[in-house]
Amino acid sequence: MTEENVPSGPTPFQRILAGRRSIRRYLPTPVEPDKLRACLEAARIAPSAHNAQPCRIVVVDEPGLKDRLAEKAFSGLYRGSKFAAAAPVILVLLAKRSFVAHQLGSRYHRVHYYLVDIGVAGEHIVLQAQELGLATCWMGWFSRRHVRKVLNVPRRLKIVALMPVGYAEKRPTREPPRKTLEEMAAFNRVPQD
Ligand SMILES: Cc1cc2nc3c(=O)[nH]c(=O)nc-3n(C[C@H](O)[C@H](O)[C@H](O)COP(=O)(O)O)c2cc1C
Image 1 (cartoon, protein in one colour):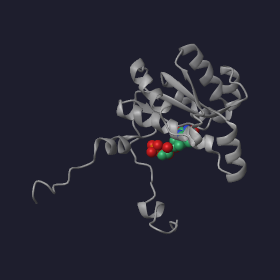
Image 2 (tube, rainbow, N blue to C red):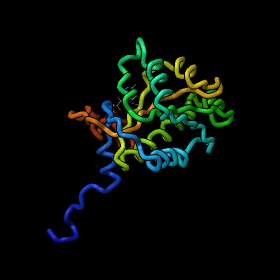
Image 3 (cartoon, rainbow, N blue to C red):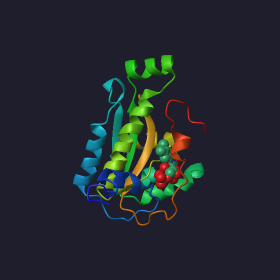
Image 4 (tube, rainbow, N blue to C red):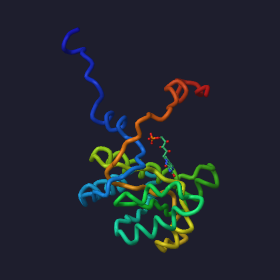
């Protein structure tokens, strides 16, 4: 094997992708303001349908407010989500629906582009966080009614997801099952799975 064709291994970006996991155990260590800002900036520059930029984020880092939010949002049916309360920051991902990109899209294409947009912006946050050594977890399982109440979120904003951000106390040891590339993608035909 010559020097040129020695496999170079994963690129830095591939390492970020492969290293990311949903983290459910957090240290109390605060998140440095610059790192948090970089994560929010990553969401700001995300692409969005019709460039509508529907993503709005409440950064909950004030301990009293975070405790109140967690207590209410993760109660009853949602108590399994309490792990997020340990993170020093909880991001609340909101969507502002706009007429062209969102209501027309939903009506004629039956695709909720504003939800796609929040997914894209949120994943920018996740990957930026991963690069900076931070841990995150997408969360859809919480009481939206209580989040709306505690944070006074107006009706025009849809509450899409929560995302704890912090430093991992523990990473999951087992890899989650993933579909194979063949199950997920196919050239010039629909994947069979
Ligand atoms: C939109 C979305 C919502 C999710 N909601 C939750 C949640 O409420 N609670 C939770 O523990 N994990 C949640 N997850 C994390 C998934 O369970 C996780 O991504 C999946 O099991 C794969 O594991 P990994 O992220 O470690 O690769 C959510 C993920 C996504 C993308």
